[in-house]
Length: 372
Image (cartoon, rainbow, N blue to C red; front, side, top):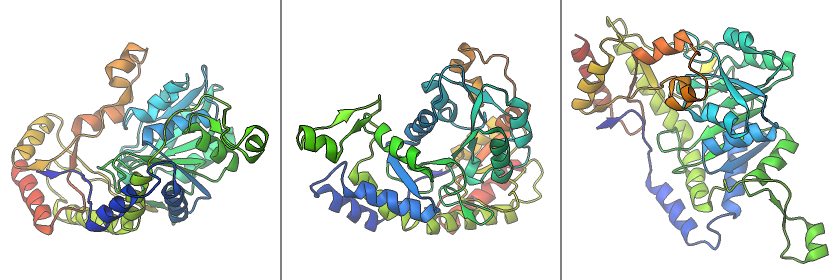
């Protein structure tokens, strides 16, 4: 099966992990800080904090800005549920703004419609690896004194108007799940230029426990103290060793994804019943996903046919508010028509660096055959 996306683990990754496995520190050690520093440098941010998943860093981002009951955070329905769940974890309420018809990212016009006195932040998701209209959204949050949390789970290595994603928004979160552009098995990262937030985030992932020279001098070298309710969201040194190795190759991984996307753009263009993804001017997309649109009445048929011939297409995403849990907690009257139409028609084509040129040709030929 040619998967829509999957990890690429090479010998140097294995060697890096093997070396970490026999080191004295398996967790809470030097490789964590090294990975954070190298990732921050890569994206051009002052600070980076590694955690156990992208969901964990989303939770941390909402916590650090003090989301609480009564607060609202605007996000997109076209995403994994964690982009909204993180607000619920803190007692706030996610509010869903519809997406653009061409980029499938959150629509800045719809964001403005949803803002009210309870709004505290926006979680803008870079769907498929294409950055949102960050210049417009940043202006919206600046004028209204909100916080912009950029969910770049799909977009490690992407750029917007010449700047790397991770250096633009108030906070940016990344995923290192195996299907993403680089992996630490499971894992996530949050970047920011705010030193106070950075200090809080480091404590948040480690139970809210602090140890200072002053404390140890007063009580003893063993002493540490919990100062707020944190979580165990730490990422191990072994995983960070893999992250350090993968980060060196991230640009190469993205270059291959872009090569595949360019072939799709060229060789699938003009086919009846198939709409290809549009790239926003100024965006450098990492192509975590290559989403196409087909006739809603044929989507399931095409999905099954392609998987039968070994092409692991996917569907991304069921609108978050349509999930049973969200329906049960009061989102039954929410409707984002563009996102719902998009979900009904979307198929994700394989686009990942393990694919050979022959694999790409096979995908193209089978799609043409199925749509003929």
